[in-house]
Length: 337
Image (cartoon, rainbow, N blue to C red):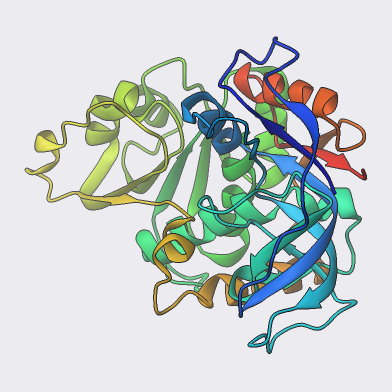
């Protein structure tokens, strides 16, 4: 089958950084679905893994996490899906990726594709939606669907993939005031279109930006990038007994200044459940089903921003370069082999 992978960690400008390959179709585990992939998206984790991974000699490492496709076959213990079902999901970081014509994935992290979205629109959502949902409801423990609670959440990098869907979830499913950060006219406009009540400039101190809009303290901070750079301002901005959740990879994180306010810190990695086969693994299937239903009800929208053509090495290199630029908005998607 066709796939796109890499044999060595190279700069994305190098034509060999991602190449078209031909590999055997995957073998199924008991809970696996065999999915014929129709669309994929690119996330920062694709770029990070490509930069940090040294494949075995002569073996292509296949990237890709988000996917939309059709179930072609099922493992012997599958109960949730059958051949012909249209699905979307984010895969697992410890298995071959979705940049392939056929992909094997555990049914317990898969959901039905939203019926109202195209393949490209749906492929933009799974990984970032799982990350945002787990961050908001599992890590920060914001009450789901409670529109009466007071307080505010600051979302650092509101125009990115996770920030775009997190803004929608917080605005639609909680009573929190949603404050996003952005620095360019186009990203500010995007954050507002996603539902942010306010947008402040993350090139300036975040605590000063909050004071300028009359909200000097927030109960929650979702730090999606540059956490170490913003940490002093976050400590100032969080209300006593507030909570920080982060997803990036700071080299160090000194949270000793958080003690006086009894602030809590939460890590979110949406791959944790599949990596460790946690007892609640099926929760990702369930929450993606909820995302799908909310999309079809018109409460959530796709975060697709750019469609970069077919699923080829050349187009994936363009998508990786866009993510690496730090100037991407929403999600970039590729459709069809």
